Amino acid sequence: MGDMRIGFGYDSHRFEAGRRLVLGGVDIPGETGLRGHSDADVVLHAVIDALLGAAAFGDIGSHFPDTDERWRGADSAKLLSAVVAEVGAAGWTVGNIDVTVICERPRIGPHVEAMRARLAELLWPGDAGRTGRVSVKGKTNEGMDDVGAGAGIEVHAVCLLKGKSE
Ligand code: MG
Image (cartoon, rainbow, N blue to C red; front, side, top):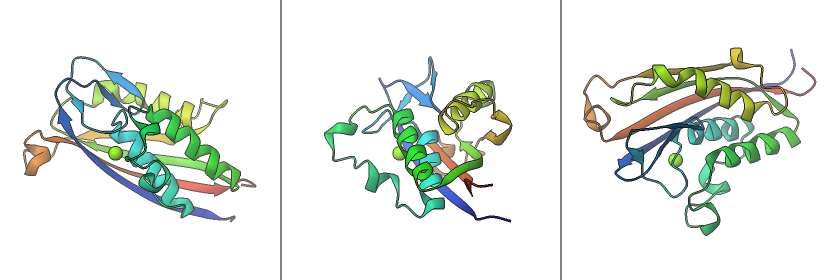
């Protein structure tokens, strides 16, 4: 068995009226967006932190500080692509990811397949047919706490990195 690393990522963002909602690199029309310096794609942010965590490369804040004007309104897909390239340059390839999205709305189920396809494109550039290695699961917080009251969206993500020789 070659070298493998597990990583965990977490993120949360509050809803903010007047912004578009982007989840997992997919535009979700007709829903309230999220507050954030970038496009506030809370799913991609959690995935980025899972990859960085697995490689022990710090976190999203150290790579893309929200005090830096370069990242204002940034497309988080570009940030994830940069992180995939960084871990790839260090000899790692992504094995799989598993993502749980927690919110009262929107309903995540209707958007799962689009998110899986987009995540596969970003994680394996040039070989996006790996949707079987991407899991996205949606659930509510059963009305509990601020997320349950509809204040925002929370995301938990894990990933496996494998040595490139695997
Ligand atoms: Mg974030």
